[in-house]
View 1 (cartoon, one colour):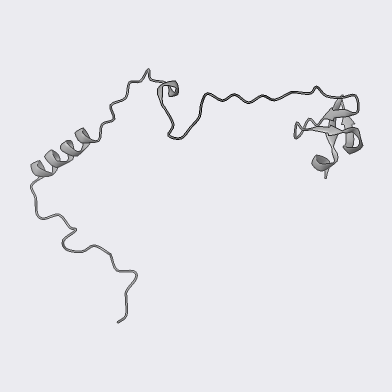
View 2 (cartoon, helix red, strand yellow):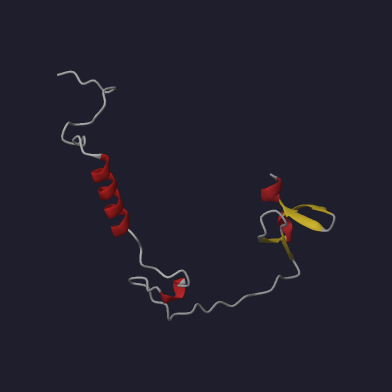
Length: 100
């Protein structure tokens, strides 16, 4: 059987019966009242618990400052070795990856 894909896909049972305007308004107001979210505007994300999240752990990372033979690319902001220096303009250094 051939199928007309351009035809509307609304079945007769999906179409509303000839209901009055008042009945439709009452149904709409009832549905909007039920979908209201009970949340305070002053609530923050600190009060929410994520399921399965372990929030007591803190990451211990040792930050090493930029070394003498390193520079920070002003395009990608990555710390690179001086062998990757492509150009320097107005005191700003750019790596070979960003200069392509």
